[in-house]
Every structure is written in C-alpha cells, then in structure tokens.
Image (tube, rainbow, N blue to C red; front, side, top):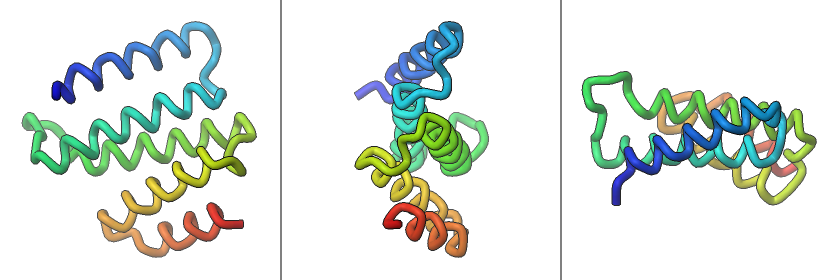
Length: 109
C-alpha cells in the first residue's frame, strides 16, 4: 500500500475543495480526517522521512477536521462521534489525557 500516494491524493482533494469554497463542509472534514489517518499509518510504520513527528501532524489534522465538522454542524452525527474518538485517541498517544477526556465527553453528549 502506497501511503504517501494516498496522502498526496487526499491533499489534492482538500486543495480542490478549498478552491471551490467548500472548506466548512462535512466532505472537507472527512478528507481532513483521512489525511490524519494517513499520518497515523506513517507513525505505525515509523515513516518519518526526516520530517516532524507524524503523530503531531495527525493530531493537527484531527483537530482541524473537528473544527470543520463543527462549522458544518456535523459533530452530533455518527461521523462526528468517530472523529472525536480519533482525536481523543491521538491526544492520548501524545500524553494529552485531559484534552482527550474532554473530547470523549463532547463526543457522547
């Protein structure tokens, strides 16, 4: 599986959505979550390519996806629950347990 190729494709889709003025949409949040998941996979395979730690990059994209989904009024959906769970999991990996607990609570309320 070519994770870098998938990442490039998701980044291109996100760029196209941005050009079309469709950033605050469920679709854009979904693509941003896929980008974060690519970085998660890179973390598991220790594929850093002398760049920043992909765990932090993944976290940043999960946070952005949550913001986009919130702007699109989609946090109270199944997709929102999945996203908040992924965000909280990424925070736990990085030792941000207080933020993770808050996001788990937001997800279930």
